[in-house]
Image 1: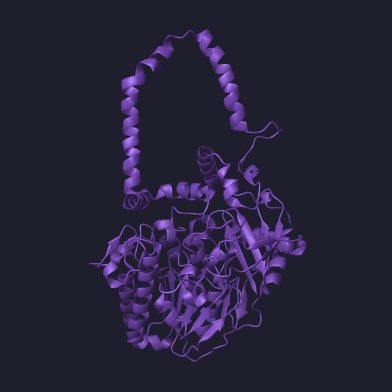
Image 2: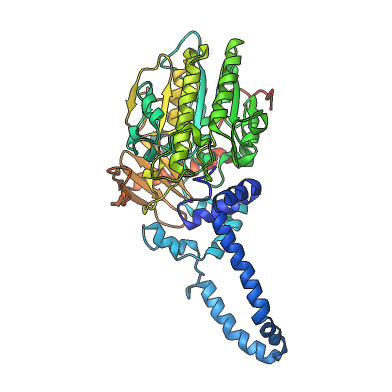
Length: 555
């Protein structure tokens, strides 16, 4: 949904998000008013002052311009027009300058400073309405692209018509399969979680729970938006070029989700969100793709606390616990995706429930993360008191980092996020190999004890097919990482290869990508991922080879 919604890393990112979120004026402007009162006041005073000074001192000068002869006006206009035209074109070459010409260095901030903000806004509006053109990334036969992706991911399809679909047998097969709860955390990056290298004192509950289950120490998000993370954690796919699948026309029905896999086994599936689920088309996408029930803000009666983005996380976990308890009592299998709201600008939450961090503003990301961590602890504490806990697999995972920043062309370290899988009989493991959100979903489905057919673009960490790989989308750039080698592809530019050097700590803000000689095969594979993801979407091939979705029962 947002990388701290309107606080992205670069001006081009800001422009894209600004344009996309204009369709949600209530949420955006309520957030702006809540967090930027002083800035808005100053802007209003400046506008009023300008109007006053103009009307008092310059109005007559403007009217006098109409008394100038047309011949003189034209004579003055021509050189002025020429200067403006040269400035707008910004090039004496055969093509005018555009945003891609601002790629002077691998330092993105230097590149972004050279751009014209009004032009960026107009271009973002244009780019947001036109169809995505893959040709800007490069060309490759689609059969070769699919084969490259299958090889990199170590996936062998059971049906040539559905390239990713396969039968995955559980490593934990049981007579009675378990329930599944995926609690997606808004914008919690690794830098807030001590147990994976972050700052101390912000997430005591995550640190404590990491000793009770599977801790993913080197997990990377799909992208920088919540819809990318939700797609990865619900459908197990990577970020396709252009808009996320939650908002794309061809993925509103018959697009694989965990509901698709579990419905034949009698599971009731739900999406529980404290805000308005129409945001980013979450409601439409989840219901259209097999989920039985949506519980969002309007269904929370008498919430204890409400922010511009919805009810607080504490209300969310209390309601979810009640729902799971009721279903378990009726012997109804369930799988649910929960989505938090509290760690979100303007960072409003019940401050009385946590010990605020010294030296940090009350309405700050660190305190908001600490409150989100408090709600996580409360949720697991509530669940442990109920009978359903022993028969449920719990996943706590972030959608993306709070704000993606850094000088690298793709700031890989800022895609690093936490995840923990808990359960009554899950042994404590610290898994330190590279993982993706698709791997987290595959691992969770493995742990519930069912043999499943699915097209998830990842593997359970208990599978010998698991690869040390991640694929990250950053605005229009994509990075394919295999071990510590990273290939980056960008529209209209040559592919590049880097060696990734992990930060020495969360305070290390130096460059982490070191340019090395081109790895042509890795760069071709990165292109193959982009082309294959788009092809699977366009041809509606990201689904199971067999089976159909049932109609939803409740909205």
